[in-house]
Length: 84
Image (cartoon, rainbow, N blue to C red; front, side):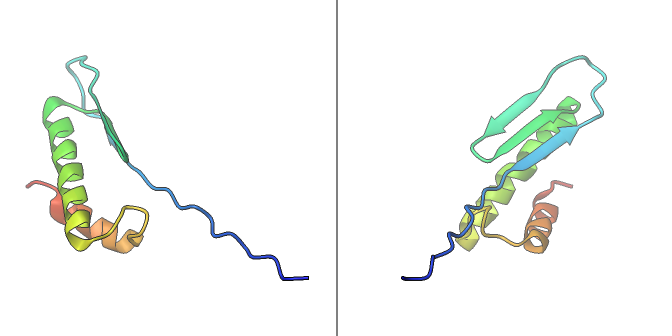
């Protein structure tokens, strides 16, 4: 009898941006393959969207997928991708 092979768990990942500073009544939702951005003022929502786009661009540049990157590295990428 051969030993049972353990299947590696399938890793999945996604980013969620949640803006809480909306005072104009607009419902803003932007989604992509591995992210969702919900709420926020027009400015905040735009900044979150730009951050996510730049984050995925940097991951692509590094040759990594979201599921592969370690949390500490992802935090550094997101921080660097956030517009001033």
